[in-house]
Image (cartoon, rainbow, N blue to C red; front, side, top):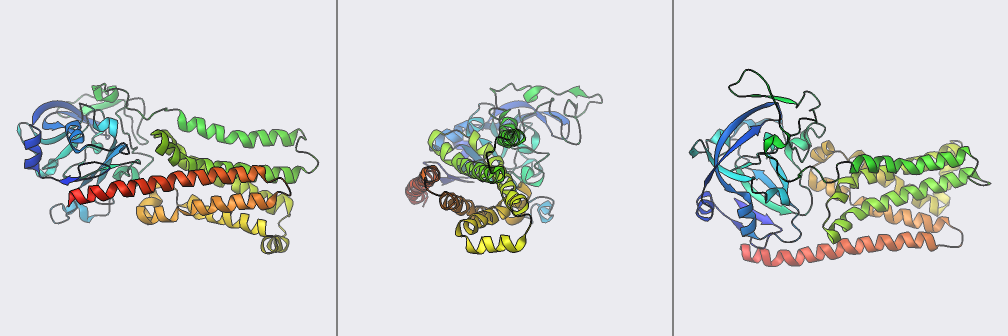
Length: 405
């Protein structure tokens, strides 16, 4: 098994070495499948926290990513395209260091059978069973939330956290009850599967709804001003400019999420980054629609002349065009279809779009460029944080690679 990423002691270990480090102990846990069946299993294993402590994660390690063995000869099911193999899973670092999380090497007093995940599998009793990745061959400590197989395959059905919660139903069935293997009657499902760990639900559970509603407020405020005749002598121009400014603010806000996490260590900004980016595209669409429809009356000749002759419109239109592929590929399904590496490369266009948006703003104003330049400075600071962080990670990676060799 390879242990790599944001750790001071990357290494490759085998099962015998692990058992030499960490003696096996018995843990009797409930296991609750997301498909509403359950059983009680006496596992043999050792605390995942012990392994985490031994390899010494750096301050950058916020998540632990797991990868299973990819070998269709041994595992014929991997020949199918039901899932994107190899199977991958992940935990937050605080979840991985919880005393209930274990790496199992056996059950019922015997070594793990192959079909149960030999030689090493993850057991996290407060989460649904699909989080228990089997036949682990790689553990990687990472800064950002790692992709997980079932979340990629069906993000509306299988979340990253996947804590057992009887009050949150699966889209296709209730999670309020379960059928214990060997029993006929259903029994009530317990929160966190009865494990009652410290609160592991996603931080600030109301965050996304609050951000969503708050993101609609600028549009509501602009509509109210329009109905009350408070947009000045040229309401179309005022509305057009305001929508463009709102789009730029949301775009810069989405780019600020990762730098905030780098500086503060908070992970919640990453949870709203995509939503902020999509709202930036939403307001950019309204901005362009107002220009083409209300301002220009869909006079495509005049619009083409504007785009080709007036440089600030050309730059602004270019910024909008770059946002289109980013918005259309923002779903987990598209990440899986394109591949994460290519998807990440494509989404670097957001930086180009933001720069063009600031230039569009600067060229749009007549005299006082204080406000657009301020946005440019903010954007520059965000870029500087990302660049400095990348350089720091590269410097830290060199000695780790040398030690691993």
